Image (cartoon, rainbow, N blue to C red):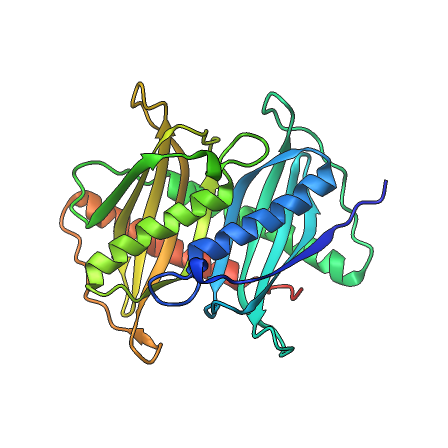
Length: 316
């Protein structure tokens, strides 16, 4: 059976998609990305699929409300049960003007059976030189991604840390569910963006903060409707204009209050001046030994990110 290896979703950004900056917030864009990539993964595999990883998310410009949004997803590599999907978001006025790229990232989905076990997916075989180059780049990034995941897994967070942090708690609602009965990966990424935004706002004293990068979004286990959700954002490093924020999402049965890690990522925010340029942010200085160790991890991740960025992007 012939399967499409690419699809595009188009729609208008609604006023309800806007964040405090006035433009569409990064969490909403990540939600769109996840839904588009899921549609392609489910179509290709013929199975229910779960988000396993989202990496190298670059927010290059904001999406304005009322603009036409185009989310293009394309399969570039398949493993035994995984599907590596390149995603590009473009937007612009719906009056016929050219759409401009706003966000780019890689999403990895895994096909599973009714018991949640991974299952094989049809092999993607590129049929063009461009497709073969994209596949080769995806393979090259696998080891780099493994280094990022290992670095993030090595981090330890305890009450000994003194860094600024924010914790949001709530119940996962039925409106957050996908057709497999689990919370959308895109919804989880929106929660991550929201918690990080609160922390960035508290640190800068200004709500005009936007996400410019997110990496190493690792999904460890599904999150169910009715679960108690805890989203903890912690500042781990500041640059001249940037705030590097580590976010952990935990969830579990509210009857027991035993929460397990479901998602971990690093997200970078900048504060905006009235003219839209990045504003300088005050420096965070590590105090405890844990603070120092976590900031060192953040700096190591910056170096790993540079290694990923040195691998050329394929243009969709």
